[in-house]
Image 1: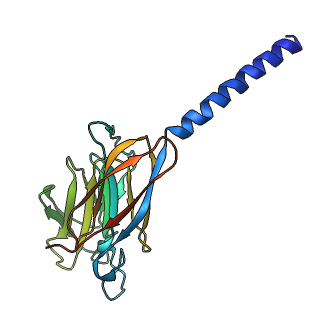
Image 2 (image 1 turned 30 degrees about the horizontal axis):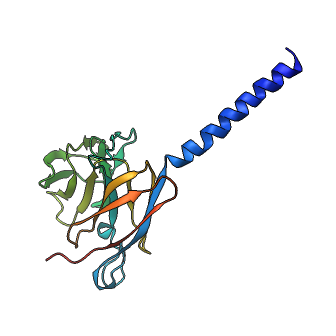
Image 3 (image 1 turned 135 degrees about the vertical axis):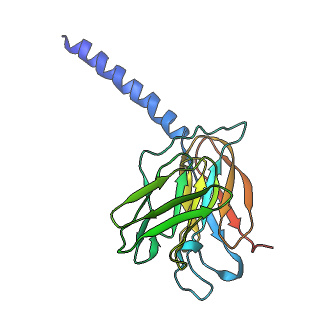
Length: 217
């Protein structure tokens, strides 16, 4: 192969690379922002500043007719352990269709159940070393309980797709890798009312949002 042919070939690859890079960058944006709670409460904390995992704040993106999102069920499994007569973690997020595994790692039997409108189920009594799983067909809050230990409680929030983020204690959040378009930004906190806001991801750069949640009425 001649040097001139090799040079033309290398120039061809270079031209292709120069075309592909800006297209990739222009087709993925982030939604960043801050979330505030009423009365100065921080996400993940009680009013007196103590850690409360069930007080986690969550934000997520839903598609619109103009900018639909094709959901992809994550291949990984959400795991909620039963140990020390507590659920660990006490707040989890699952995508519709994603498997949630609930192993009993305790020295006593448990009976995990929920009567939530999102999904009502009862996994029955099972001992240490056994595990049962469940998945969810629709979005919303699911409260986990154990019929044998009343102090046990946890929350699963089921979202429609993988575009979600837990909010940091400082109120900051980031939802990455969204195509340009207009979406619906939603937020959840167990003590607050519903939140919904339209947000537009531009062709270049990020979209920013300020979410202010109010106490339930």
